[in-house]
Image (cartoon, rainbow, N blue to C red):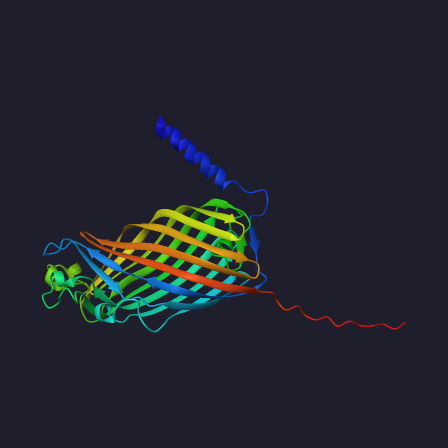
Length: 336
């Protein structure tokens, strides 16, 4: 009985948050030129879980992190951003090596949907705490460096919002913001290609695995998947401050592949998918400042072997909104 009452209260609360507001809940700056810059870091660690030797059940791969500087603009329905990694690293190069990172993004809106194209490329990984099985490493220098190991992700996502008053531009806070609190259910459609590979060596340490099994000798793991992630989004607005949160869980139909030297194999299966976005910031018509974070976890399973990769972004975004220059109209004086 208590469970039913709790569920009714939760359902009633969700319905209240999902109701259409009496007035338009957002401000639109689509007719302004929006110029912005962001500073932060992105990471794409991955791990491979399996029944390995020496009591190891998970091998963790990490890359060094660099501060990423991005520049972008938004106008009307289009937004574009390009990011570059700055010199220097956040972790010691002696332990985590020197990574390379590229990021390209494109966003646009069509009616009640928001579209996002994201391309990421990382190279230069280490196997964390490889001294557990590699006698040539020590506690001072425990990681095995893999400079030729790379990771790539290409994603096309779209969000459809139940409420017509919920606009992603106003959530992201560049070409819009909200003037009141508002929430809605949404459905995220997603198409992804992702994975990791190495041209010179297998991904897994060969001393941990049975090398007679092809997948353990794999030098590339990748997947192409498509699916939907339903969820709920809520924005809270007070004065000129704004905070938002997205949360969703769903699944994808996945074509997964691995290569082991000259041989390769493809399989078909299902995989879970999550959606989590958080942001907080200050926005007025002429400028804005935001702290934003995105978390995306993707996985591939080959029987007893599971490849899991997380794509994380944390950044500070600041920009200005500029009015279009109005065309000067010549005044004609008529002398009668």
